Image 1 (tube, rainbow, N blue to C red):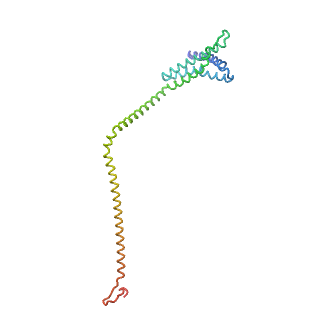
Image 2: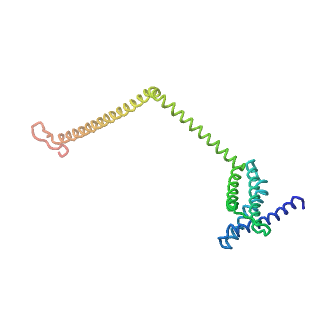
Image 3: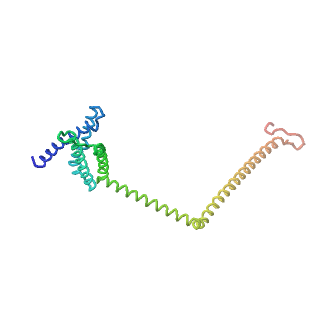
Length: 244
């Protein structure tokens, strides 16, 4: 067993005594209007932000820090939790002593606010510690780079829009002949196609009428051929040669 382990065990023993003082003061005095069971539970949970919080920041938060911000935050919280626990423990000792008549009325507001101050300090410290992690800072730098890239693209497009607005008339005058020619070509093409379709329909109707007239003419010739009588040399009507 090395010296570091011995010192850690000694510190834990002292913290246990300090924690008992803290729990006793909270459960007996600051929570005297609360039921006994509730005051015991609240006093026990408060040890999380004093003695246990001190051990956490000392043996976990500080060694695992990856940035100077985390290192500084863990160090500050170590001393805040330590002095907060010692202050409450000293107040409990002063109340229980039978040698001196100690009046703590002057520091009652401080002792009353001490638990809230320690809890708030640990919550704020955790937020700063978590935000100061190296991986989170790398992620933040990546997001900032992406933001700058998007901002650059937005600015480029805004400048392009401003340039377009400034040169709108000149560009319109330059492109107008091309648009005009395109419109004229499309209108002429539609017009020519329409007339071509109409002419094609007219030719088709004319061809149909010619074919109809031709068929009618042929039918009339056949009827005339059947009705023409055949006479012999004597002027008499001759019959069908095939029937003679």
